[in-house]
Image (cartoon, rainbow, N blue to C red; front, top):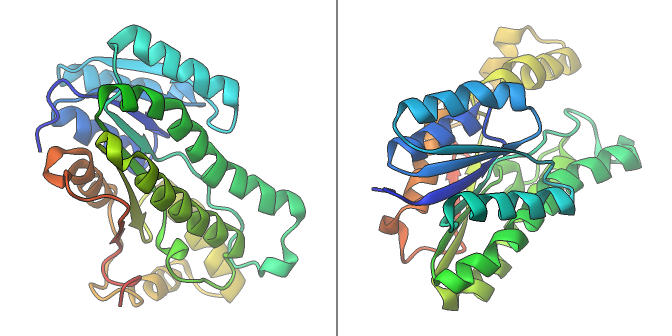
Amino acid sequence: MNLRDKVAIITGPAKGMGADITLTLAEAGADVVLAGRDLVAIAPVEAKVKALGRRALTVACDVTKEEDVARLVTETLMEFGRIDILVNCAGGTGTIEKPGHENTVEEFEQILDLNMKGCWLTMRGVIPTMITQRYGKIVNVGGTFGMRGRAGRMAYSASKWGLRGITKSTAIEVGPYNINVNYVAPGMVEGERFNTKVMPEKAKKLGLSIAEARKTFENEYALRRISTGQDIANAVLFLSSDLSRQITGVDLPVDGGWADL
């Protein structure tokens, strides 16, 4: 899975699985563009990429803003001259353990804006260059709640179901130009968001301890364990490489056995 001299844009590259994805692609030989809002958090990841001997460019970017995405594409092309890979990792969690009919309009719109519109804007931004190159790999990081419904996560689930539709329709549209578009669906993933938001909110809502809340997640998976960021990064690496040249429009759950069982 050699990405030597490929140029990869990664959104949401600084935290959790985003950092793992960024470093894994760099280790495979890619030069990377780190696109996100929290430049302080991105800085140490950029330093690690450069320590691996790869080039790195950080671009301040809110993926929900058209002008930010346009600047991201322009700066990438000015620096590297091409765009081979786009990994859409930036995304939000939305409300947790809250029935859909109790969501506010603002809560619903915010998560759709980030998880759907943001990915669409970045895809729209890079595809013209990939068409010209007759080459490109796009990997959208979704979630297993976009493959099975989940009570208490309606808005998030809707956003990830929508992202699957964006992925599949785009795969058909750009396939003739040798561009692959795929969807990686993590289950629960070890990291700050899982430990500081998802588990505490679930524990509070259900009257459980943190350890008990964790166990409820683990027991849902065939492998009885929570995925790591590296598990997700490995899947993204495969779909970003030419080993996946004949794979497009697929949903790849990385969840220890839940979505497809």
